[in-house]
Length: 375
Image (cartoon, rainbow, N blue to C red; front, side):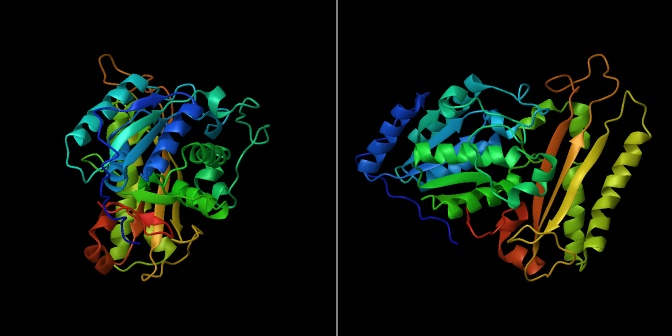
């Protein structure tokens, strides 16, 4: 679908230099009702904080398409498994608010064809889960939203409660905010499928917009978890995007079978592992492959062969292992590189003619059944 047209601002919605921070649902709902009564649209960007340029790209897209943009900052416990990193997940609220204030001022000074950030929602877990204390166990008690079978493959196979938690918290947030459009990043491609399925199946009155992945100069997808990577692991972490790009290059060179395509990526993985294993413990950074997927662009079912006219969604995940012998004065990440860091990424396989016709596909935009934002 084409991008939503730029809005024409109403006189009744004057711009402000900053935004209001809401901790409680009733006050946020009142602000939302005021916007509704004024005929003003609301775009919503749900985040877990630790904001980076990828998050800001979502907000920028939302500002282009709505009168008001609401941002949530909430580290949702139900999407973390029992042995995952919930307690260590970066919580940087003050820094996040500073970034948002700078962005709000930028749009305050812009012309009247853009919207503005007007609300930041920072609820507590008691506010979000007023009944039972949320459980991270697979069979734990609580009120949850499950989207199957999408939630049980790929990321869901490695993290069995992850998408249950994502769907549950997003359902709550969508009910609270009642947004006209919601914005997600292409980096978490499977999440976009789960959210769209939930929106469709439960008749939620919002549009799902997917914004291209934002990358570092060396190709690493921006992620809140990158702060855990010190210099040594950070350098090796690009192996994931290098493997994905090697597979894409093989596809553009005429390879279409799963075995031929995956072999191109495996060669990159094997070469990097061999180089790291040849280094002494005080110099190397080891990793493990979780999965590589070559999936149908509509269903995410695994493919044995890619039909060039249809393309495929290519995705993968690796685990950067803790460094073995940290050196004095070595630049390390949060936690001193002592924890395993799981990284995900994806690319769309398209015919080269389609890529040249649609430059957005070069940065990972996937045209699914839901909208894809163009920038």
